Length: 114
Image (tube, rainbow, N blue to C red; front, side, top):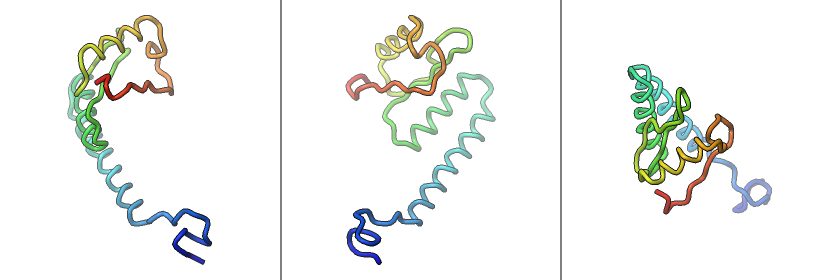
């Protein structure tokens, strides 16, 4: 039974399989272009800049920052982020904060930080 509130009146309409399929296709296209573009890049900085551009377009992000802990903790690529913000993030990582080592957690900055 389906009504205005969704299947059997449980409040949520059933997900649209067409829009889910379209979204999945768009995400796969983004990953494919990311793989091709980063394969062509010659340096880690080129990979970071390319990835940031592609992911920024795909997500509609106004800004982004890619950091590296290869030799030292550094900003490898950035877009739409003020230098002061980058300096704070890098200083926090260098002081031994959670950004100094890779982890599964993420840092959320407020919109006015950028």
